Length: 201
Ligand code: TZP
Image 1 (cartoon, rainbow, N blue to C red):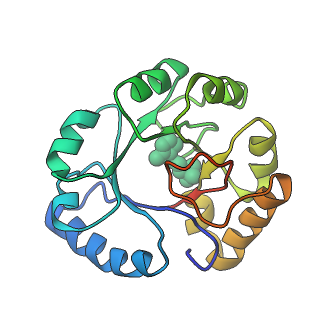
Image 2 (image 1 turned 60 degrees about the vertical axis):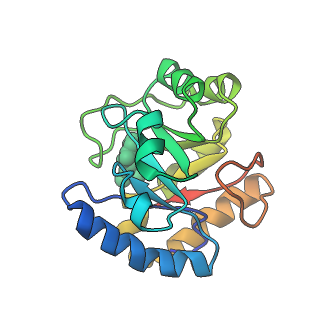
């Protein structure tokens, strides 16, 4: 993934124990840190106490941002999943360093949420100033329309994981994003640049 140009990686392990997640996060972090790619752990902020990951990510039904920070016990990025304009603004008010916004399209990876569609992407970017990762059903095939709808950052899960060649797929996404708007090489999720971050899990 890193060779494919991914700018940020999120570790998701819904069915794994904290111990298992911490082991995977530790091994992954040894790789991501060599390339200065931030590693974000989904759901379980306590992992950040044990492994020097750069951030944690919480959903609407998980710990609050405040509790996630407390559990991490040190300064980390905290991101929040949001599924509407109201949730996006609330997450910023409550101190999120970045938000996920989606699902943009219907996706089997998150079957229980109705898709938001492309129409609110511009609005969320005008309402919210923290970095926004559009997510959900985004693939190489629809990346151009997502970008044209105003997305500055995207998170891709199954598109990348199911690609026959992850490196090529990542590079193709990156080329497409870079072609539409010039991007800095690598940014932190809190950076203000228009950039193409591709999250994976
Ligand atoms: N949050 C909103 S949609 C989604 C998450 C975690 C899943 C995105 O996965 P995919 O496979 O890229 O649609």
